[in-house]
Length: 433
Image (cartoon, rainbow, N blue to C red; front, top):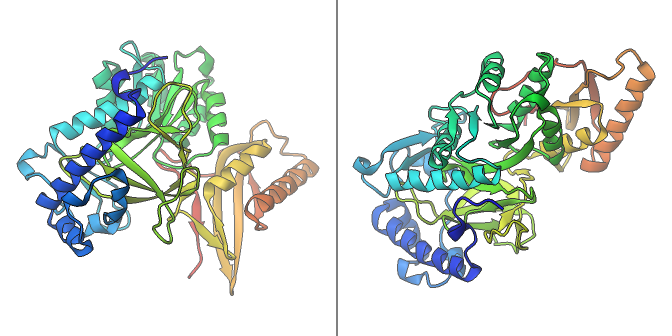
């Protein structure tokens, strides 16, 4: 079993909890002393740093919401003067002001440590070549993976996204062993290799770390088959630091979240009540060592649950299950909660289709309608009307059994749906609600 930092990755649960409590106390003290926003919130709740005497006391702390970050844009939540902030990164800001994060040198070291642990989980070492197709710039994906790769001593190719033909050429020429990008782009690259007549089994590529969007177990299987690799899930977000907050180990049974740097909770998204391990709810994260922009109980909107059983890999940090979806990605159709990943998994279960689909929601009067466009595989017999009708029926029945809604299934020709070089856009909601 390979570890990057065995001392911390395999430390005893007792020592880990003690470390978490010490760091939680320091974080609350830091934000109380240096961030007026948090000091006011804590005072409203009648809570001071001296009140944090156990990990359970995290429940007494205020939640932090994405709107809080936007309202304090760009520097209002910094706990250090700007002279100590050596990097600023941000989300895309597609729904308004971008969400920013400010990093001290120690913050960048912590971030690269998290990513390094994940890369080693995926088999990376000093001989590895990381083909990094996450976007660079303000987005945290590219620079986050890059920092972890350099911390290990890998060769890192800062490819970024786009120009797929060049991606294929450089992956072959530079002998990439690991690919990092969104799962939807990994799927697209597998398709592009096939179209270019490249046998991926002949490449040195052996593993990939894919994240930044929810993806199903069936999507994993499809990527592993098309690229002839082992596909690992990696989790993170700009607000916390970026990719690497939690990563799958070689057992691929949940993502280890680094409890020496972060405190995870699962809550009921409606009530805010903390839920027991094993119960699905919204993931909430408190940073434990961040200096630049520490966050208390950040509401991620991501739906998952905590796996408390020990992992066979030997690491003692607990795991979260792969994401079930997001509370803000959830669609309510005819009163039913629907997540794109549910549909994805159901479609790929059936076979004869590519992992390319689109959900289109419309409304006639007061009634919602769901149409699912899905691409057929190139080896499917498009000329056989009976086979097409039979496949449509299987999909319609399967979707109905999974989400409880009858959907219109539209089978489309291979390569007819738009591809994405970043996060895939799976939903087109045309309702006027």
